[in-house]
Image (cartoon, rainbow, N blue to C red; front, side, top):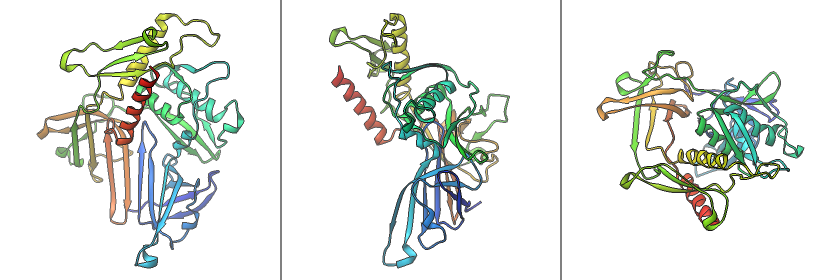
Length: 383
């Protein structure tokens, strides 16, 4: 496998062209978050005029690998036409939900939902994209797949949050992934959730998948153990001002093992939609749940990234796929971990095909760290 053909479609899924002679394509799929792609192609090749904003690219015929174009740029150097290359960038199709925020119902301050993870996720997509109160907010191409009630039970509330970031937060909390794929028959985009398989070495239900230099399944592996972003105890502050503000402590570690953080949770309601007081025990439980959820952003201490051998004993998308939980091992390092395959980058170039993978949570980027710091600063201002 070297170059995979891509099809260009309009946003309403009319086929415009097929391209199989681009210079390179990097397509990243993510289980919890929104992935992206980058395509390089000489301007003078056929059908480049159709690589326009909001058109879709479909990898081969795989309805689960779809991107939406959001960026184009071109340059030229002294080599003239030979160097005139379009750089086309975009998001996985599920990135379209980032165009909406979570608006609460007009009769209450927060949009509250309890149930299994799939029900909660689809509730927010239904209310803000598929069937919102304001029809101008509807994205007409998007529909919900049937609800199979997958995932653990959770209670969630949201107010004016970016929808894709809320779905990612629910996904991290519950281990349920989400996506938007094409329904070619209906000519619609379908929002759905996914549960990965357990392919770890100690289970017996599925054939295990072990990524290790000893099994000729890894070309490279990078292991990082770090506490730079680690926090294990939270003070979760709810409503109220000054000494009257409700604060719940999550964790009980001591001395050097104790690494504290502050979590602003003043959006946790203390009255219901009828303005009646919520029992104190329920408010404290909601604050505790929020603290545990937010601590997940700080608990990742070990990071694994690697390049998977394309001709390994394990076949991509057959033996393992995005969202599956696998075993990663390097005996020389004394490292054996079971981790979810949370990110896969497919690289198609004239010289060959490569797979890069992230197991577990990715290392925090500068933008992620800045967001966390800004949230902390904002919380301090509100105290």
